[in-house]
Image 1 (cartoon, one colour):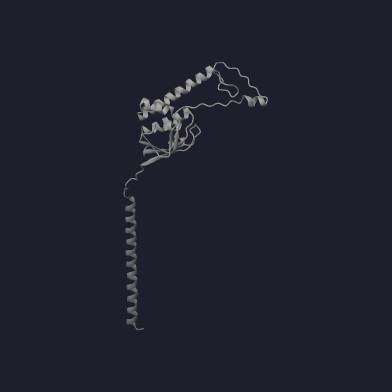
Image 2: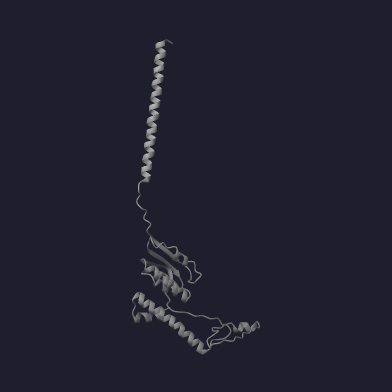
Length: 226
């Protein structure tokens, strides 16, 4: 190889080296610009996520202090919930716990719109609790109502006597200790208990009249219905 040829080769190698250097510089610059662009993109203030939602509460059991649905009310985010839908499928329960559920629904209704859908049934205490909602909706096949108060006691005296058991009790009041599964209630005890049940029933009917604007005639028809 002549000197001129060697010189040409050296110049070509040098040119290739210079191109590599420029390529690396442009590549690094592009990488830097990309990183800066991504940083600015992700650092830009974003539109806040709308956390608004409709709370759904499912009541699908008898109403008692041990019912599982109570905790659903505790999980409601009152800052973001814009309304509530209650799915009611309850045959009722004790008077006190049904009133507690009514109050729970009313408290919710005071802070947001509350609609209630009866899917299968809302009877007795289930209907009482439903009265706390703004609107009650129901499927055509749903059973609603059964307004009234029921008290039951079992008479097992004959069973006790057959197995040789007898009961003796001492009370400090004429109504204390009743109802008893050993003997029938005396007349005055039954009469007093009936007055208590009627008082609860009148309160129930008054609540229906107040919350649903129902007149006396219709209210009496409701009272005598099953």
